[in-house]
Length: 233
Image 1 (tube, helix red, strand yellow):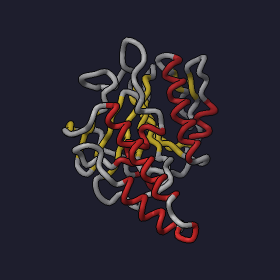
Image 2: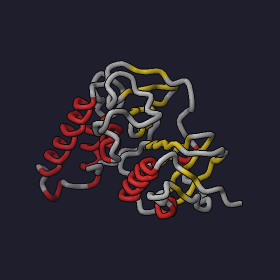
Image 3: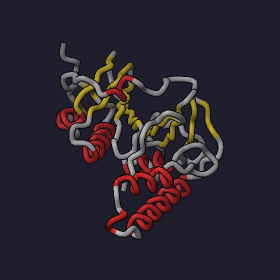
Image 4: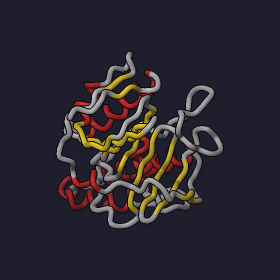
């Protein structure tokens, strides 16, 4: 059964989702996304492989929907008509393993210790600089995958500020366009951010941490997150 097309609340919502999907595809041309839609809201989950986190982008939609399906990110992007503010829903695909393990919908509590937006971006810049400098200093014969992995695990697993959030999660947020100041008089609808309109927030629920920004969220498990890529640049 073909799902009904999505009508976004405005053209800007469609454009923002298209930009998010394009960034995901940059990291994985065969990327899949899981879509969950209810009344008035669409949540899109993706997993950029260079970071091993879950990225979540929400959008406002009109009409009633009861949808939970995994689709090709590329096909969804191609179906978006930004001028009309609509998108078709591609045929379902066999979901990757991560699509079956999503963060909880509720029970989130704010965690202390996260720097302001500039501080989070600074932590990412420092980590990128250190990773590049240390790998460039290696002699060619020592620049092995094992050595790059070792440096990567050390650099990208460091916490951001006084939190348990690994810097790779913040780097993923920056690479996907989530760590940027909010333009205009108001933050995007549904951000739920307190304080400054562009302030990121760190939330926790069980084993999950979630870096929330007005443009989207990055979720990562506090334990058992698996191997770490060392090439998010």
